[in-house]
Length: 303
Image (cartoon, rainbow, N blue to C red; front, side):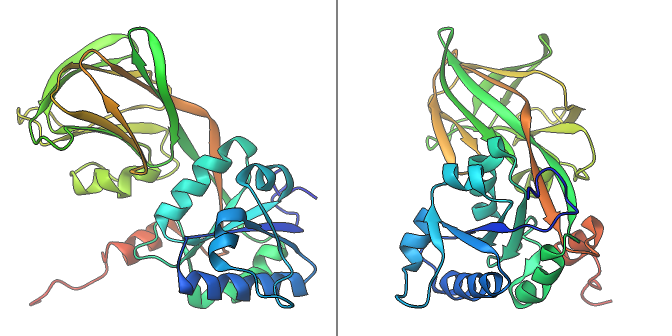
């Protein structure tokens, strides 16, 4: 039975992936694993998560496996943690098209939408195939130096070019579909997916993009010219950033993987052929999530 192929089918093999070295994660993971196994589900715990949680003899009956083994064998992966844990799992599992469910054990949790207190009560809907699927785009990025690819990665949230630790602005050229757009002197540039529009891009005054918007946001970081504003381009655009001057320059993938850049390096980005499939509990609303996380419903102080 494959949840990837038909979202109406109940998952029979579920992976659990958690934030490392957290007592709360260990408690939640054991509770969830026990619940699922009592309902006939085969549970696979990601191997680094399993190593940090530790196995209690006679109590824990799950097996552990690598991300590759999880991708090849499970119907659904449940991520226990915050958005950072989800970002890592999404990049590692994207090629296997494993649907992801998020249980929030972090702070804001834009992508982990099930509260820890509701975790077990939501599982019945998941096992009965009532969760709602939603597809999110990924970015493919590569760093090219002297005509050769020196690094490549995926990003679910964003790819960020920045000035590094020196504190001096960098200069780079922006090309879209081969057309020169502008030369920018700034602290950097955020290239964001709709998913990432509520992350770093939001703090840099970028637009919030609904997940169904087929677009990529280009958000300058502290541009030297006030006329450099965020730009939204289509999701089929080929984007290239060419470094023209930089003392210390880096690129970050989802804020988790970093590559040092040099003058004349090119950063090339496009929509990935892979995508991420989130599964949300019945009644999930993107705008309700925004109201809660961004406190849109809160009355202004003093009013």
